[in-house]
Length: 159
Image 1: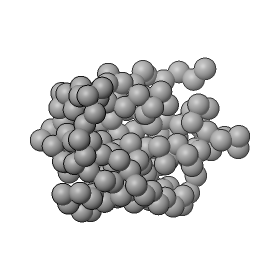
Image 2: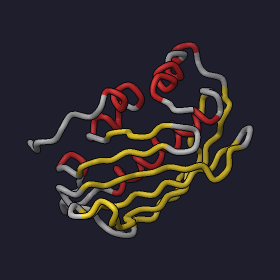
Image 3: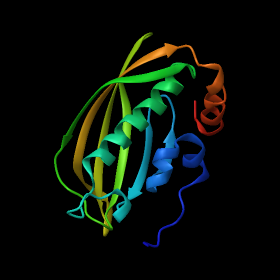
Image 4: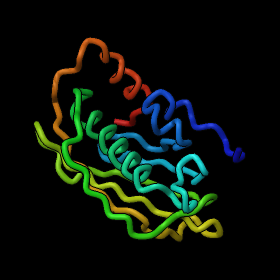
């Protein structure tokens, strides 16, 4: 098993699937949701590179979190995900993901999510490995069994 620090409690509270792969949320606001992941065997495909489905998970999760905050903690649902895998990341690489809104409407939001591989010798140098666009239906009523979801996000969001 790889030695890596446990994901922050913020990630564990906000998004269990992201937490389970080792992703750590850094920024959480209506304008930006970001975080990082050290690529491990847990998130690789058989050729030991970051699985495209994991990139898609990061994209839809970060966009959904941001959309949920941006629409006042109402329910959101992803209705379209388009992702381009441009370069690979291998076991041990650190990747940084950032979601930003392109359009925040009353019923539809569109978010752009980019994932970069960071250069270990210079964190300012990064290589785009994935670019995504996520369209979400928003301002839907929150079901009774999920009323606490917004509370967990409010705890960590910077508004």
